[in-house]
Image 1: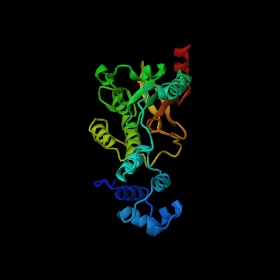
Image 2: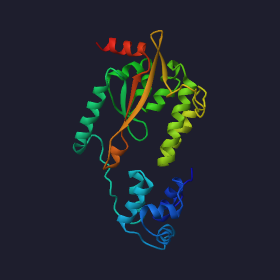
Image 3: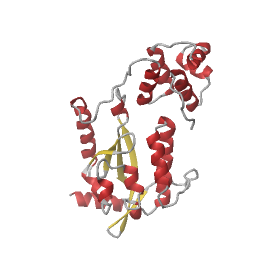
Image 4: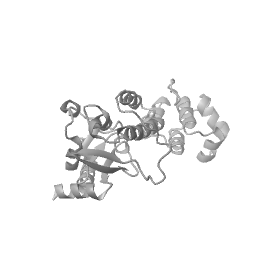
Length: 262
């Protein structure tokens, strides 16, 4: 991924255009502007309006946090608020998130922020946290670290190399979208943990998804993971929230979860 070393709006805009693999002609066509004007914006020869910058960011699907950064670089105030999750304004979001988590029980589910830090979870997640070093659960636990750390879930994951490859692929895609240095550091940390890695480019002919196969009470459970995000987010905090849920991938896993919940 290309590293952003400058702070001008034009350079940031060009960075995101190249990240999306678009030519100036293609972006100009999408944004209904001229290639010449777009070139002038990128080189600093033209000063775009805030409306134009937001419009270009929409065409490039720039994350809301990075849109604010680009606007600041152009001398404009940020458009998208970033309220803390525990503020009164975010109460409807917290309530919706908790309803979603509770509705998924008895299946494990957790809410994460942009860096995969856990911000909430339902009762079902306790099954996955069994035996984890309490030190990993202090402050704001990171879901990927909990999963792959040797003192976390790693010792219980049957298909650890495959699951590591799956998580690394997801994290790499997220880094390509956001360019977040925190995620780059997290990926480097996780790659340093033992466990191997299996490339996922050539799946088995009948493989639909990558399952999480977990040891539990001398048996093997199998889960399919799914990610849910909030639609049409209007602030950075909501845009970066997601629900990670784990559904049973076989009848035995479903029976154990439902029996334990009844």
